[in-house]
Image (cartoon, rainbow, N blue to C red; front, top):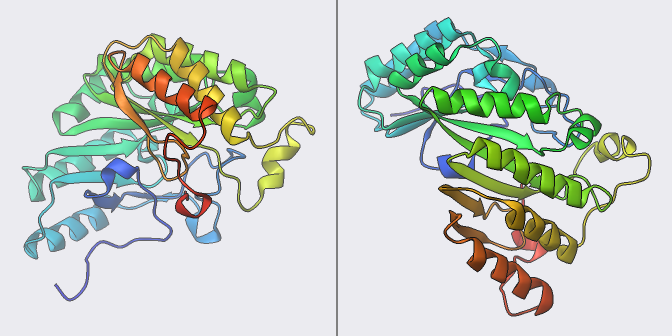
Length: 298
């Protein structure tokens, strides 16, 4: 293959767990793109627009003819699930033509993306192979969600997660450690845990907020009440989150490149072990290996 037949508009992002997946860019950018903490899709070339089904089919046809093996597919960009049910159906139909044995298709999903899709429609997409939704809830605290202009609430996030579960799909939820700064830290952790307890997602991950360009837009919304949490404060917030979680069978990961402290386990089975690890990191610095600043990234 002299060139890769999938067209990308950079930058392209994916969850860490999709590192071995084919990234199929079915939309460009994010249809919301107002979250003050996020600069992933703010570049001029990342203005939101969907890719045509004809172009997607041509790319998959050429890729298939090249003999390129695909086991998993991630539908990029920021919220492919904003596409209509019919458009998603067409995309899944094309995937099944050229890669009928693909193990899994997944996508980022904003809760608002599902308001115009019924449980029955999601179940149909699941039957076609779209089985996993990555949902960036970020927090369960409504005041904090409003401050960061997420455009979602505790209630809208829960409704989306419940709809995903009712359709037989799996959800992987992201919570942002440190999002509320010191003033809202405890509320952020407790309300996020409450949301997760009601939703019972299959996967839960925690990332540390990292502000880069245009960080003032985020900070200004807090009227001087926000600063980054220190390492011990981040760990304490994580402790409060985990301590308040009552999950039956959720894979938990805090191993993104942004995290200082790597945590992995299944909740609730490993809850005590994870809490003990955090306690050790707080009370006995140097005992638990932490990532250095140069090892961290988005």
